[in-house]
Amino acid sequence: MVKHKSRKNKKRLFIVIGLLLTIDFTINAQLESAKWVFGNGVGVDFVSGHPISFTGSKMRTTEGCSTVSDFKGNLLFYTDGVSVWNKNNDLMPNGKNLNGNFSSTQSAIIVPLPGSKTLYYIFTMDWEANKGGFCYSIVDISKEQGLGDVTLKNQLINEHCTEKLVAVKHQNNKDVWILIHEYESDTFLAYLLTKNGVDPKPVISKAGIIYSKSIYNTIGYMKLSNDRKKLGVAVNGDRTVEVFDFDQKTGNISNPLSIKFDVGFNPYGIEFSPNSSLFYIGLVSKGLIYQLNLKAGDQAAILKSKLLIARAAPEKIFGALQLGSDGKIYIAEYQSKYLSVIENPNNFGPSCSFKSNVIYLSNNNCMLGLPVFFQEYIKPPASSLVPTVVTTTTTTQKTQNYGNITEPNKKYTLSNVYFDFNKSDLRSSSAAELQQLIEQLNKNTKLSIEIIGHTDSIGSELYNNKLSFSRANEIGNYLTKKGIDKSRITISYKGSTESVATNSSETGRQKNRRVEFILKNNTPTTK
Image 1 (spheres, helix red, strand yellow):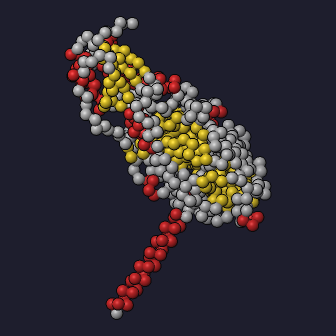
Image 2 (cartoon, one colour; image 1 turned 135 degrees about the horizontal axis):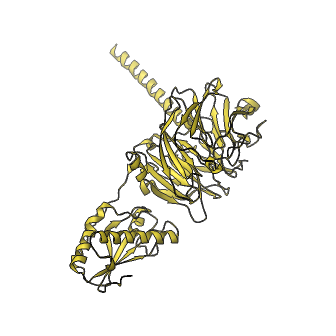
Image 3 (cartoon, helix red, strand yellow; image 1 turned 90 degrees about the vertical axis):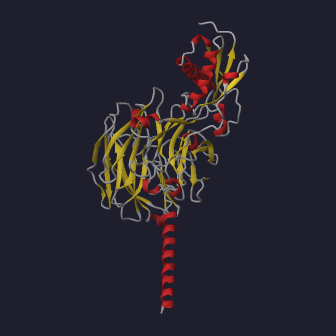
């Protein structure tokens, strides 16, 4: 009897294991965002877990586009907000002249109708607040022997909108919020898509800045964090990026955090890290990418955490940033035949590992945009949902003893004084090293000092010269504050021309971000 019971338990165990394996397979097989179609004929396939380019796309779009696959990663259709192509790259019946625009930031987003296995809504957004406005069209993928048909087109929901579109499930896990932002306003609108269609009465949230009357303020991405709790918005013309709290149950948007940039620094692409802790901002006008730590503390601490982590090659600019199903963030570079990538977007600082020209696009051109996906389709691996890694580089070198340095005109390196990428601020760990130098200068009042700044190789020659001067000047100011007369200090800079280590690794680049000094017997003449 006991033996029989044991067999029954084993059988149940095998059934449970089988169910768990089935569930795991189902989760891993949800690949609706596995195919990306964008730019000028570009396709990238993530089904294998690694991005591989493919060809055949008929799309030619500067910015907005959206793609959808089935749960196994088989392409269903794609659109630039104007035309709709099926999986064979042919136009669908009635699939022309949708009210989006190939030069609208988020021209289209494809969302399945709740409760349906065959109907998809294409929400479209015209460019620069034009009269095409915010509309929806419907695709029935069961038509045309599974190739699809546009059965309803250009149903107007709202006019006078910016080029921003986000779609995310309601907290009830059935309905879908469609989020937009009005033009010349501080108003977000959250429309609910249910099995019965679009509710015409949106949830209204007035939060953040009022977009001033400039078509450039229609431009820029809107993105949700992976945990559905934060909403990011880039306002290109007003040079502002805002991060809000989002309530998945009510659709309300509140509590703005505003990041303002200087004149000429215009944000466009934005993205959250997979674990929702870090936020990335791309400046289209300057080819720069910044990172913010949303877990740094209060708003002041978050703003202070802003760090430059990438700079485009000369003559290149960054466009969209998009989280992939592999947990990496991919970056569009305008008119490039490659995608760039942030390899470890959960890591704070340079260890997030930006790499340029990583994914070859089969000789097709990337433009500014990358596909916009229904938030439920963006499923980074569980391994990428771990807490943010905040790395701080420490050095094991002993503090240099400058008390015995008397040889003039010899170059020394401040061995424990290093700088973060793109920073000229002194780390607190530099104090002990500099105190030794101050004591030597106080002991030998006839000595003067030349301070020489250096950078790594990232950035233009002009920029690196300016940065290396700032680093040397920072040391000079520190010495002056500690009582060393300014007339005894000379500032020099070398940019990236005198590297002491490889620039191909962060460890090497940090060694190159250094300050050297030369002690001299002659006191410089005051200018």
